[in-house]
Length: 582
Image: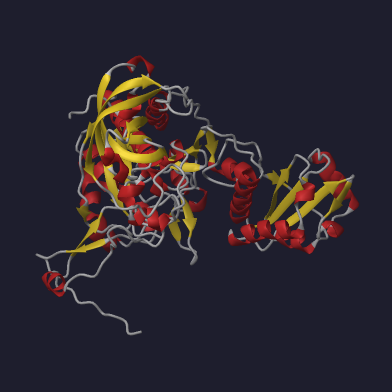
């Protein structure tokens, strides 16, 4: 029997049609001699009505058996408004068991009780769940839409090498030993960064690629070892012109794929993002903003505050409104204190404002004039709760930003099905590592603002980069910059971050040499496709929008990769393994 329809596409207008369907048994229910079966394929499910006396084979059918049936579409008497096919059912006239199935180790439904490692071990079963198929199909539509938009604007799809030269771009690389060149290694490309800039030097002007990238990093909910970027580079455009093109790409996804209105793209300077949201990837879906408490406590006798302020630090805080003061028991406060400690602060001051009084372990250290200033300056209302952190500016802002996000989750401040974009711009060009050395905040190919070039030698930490991140709902979904295109400036940049001329030539000689032959002004960006799809599908983890991901231990439970190499493989690659004794 050849399939005539997909199961999830049948509607009331198909009543009385004869159809041939295939699919997996999602559920079966017995009512005497009548058996109801939900038959699932990629499009959805439809209810089958089977007479067991006419088709005794149905007695052995269980969940995940594959059936091929022929039947007549009937109008359901007990309609199910929760299903798109809920108005109809199939009166089965013929049935064939295509394949049987063992009892599955997990429930195959949107809501499953399986732990993540079980889901990943049996990923082929996990992928049958409608929610997983919807996520991956949405991801496919996002990718297709981005391709179409870029190509409509003159961007050319060019593949770049995955096996390349090891170059320091920020993250630890995966090295691949060469069989034909003993003792030498390729690196798996962290990104197409150098190659896409060479394509600009090659005169392509507009390039894009859906590129596989590899970074040997510790994993978390929004990071994988191997991931996908939508990589974009363009010549002869200003930063504003280029960002406008990127906005078109993101807007078309929202309109064409999600069928929503065109989003807005406000621009926020890095300093303002940190001061107001405590993050360089601010979540704009809710209004809980960081407050500056320096002025109120400028003459504080509370040693926790005065010591920080006297050494150039800051006091940053949050005010939770809505009469939640009674919620904050000692146990609850300790939970939030632990959170900011994990993010770099020594502690957290919590003040509850009730009955025109302040309470909390630090309330006794707050003077009457400071209390009056708090009420006046921040318009405190009954039941408000103040959270105040103290420390160096960036670390304090980051910690209070983490608290901001946790409070928003705990007190339902984030509206559902809402998408808020923002550009974060004007990043610092450099930062210092633990030894006080300069490192590139973005990457060493990022151009400084023209007006700041003269500061590179005298005040490098004050130099602002022509870098920009596109943020969605608190996730950095794309990051990019205008590139250095003058050889002298690129060599100066390498020198500032500690490369000697010999190291520059050894690691980047081919790249720097190319700058001698007429390099155009250019800039680019890379969308983290996995992270973008995660945000747009409201998934909790990047692993939910990747077909076969690694787990948090950097292992694939399905294939059990990584695995040991054989002695023959190691000999071919001229490698020996030094195994540590237990």
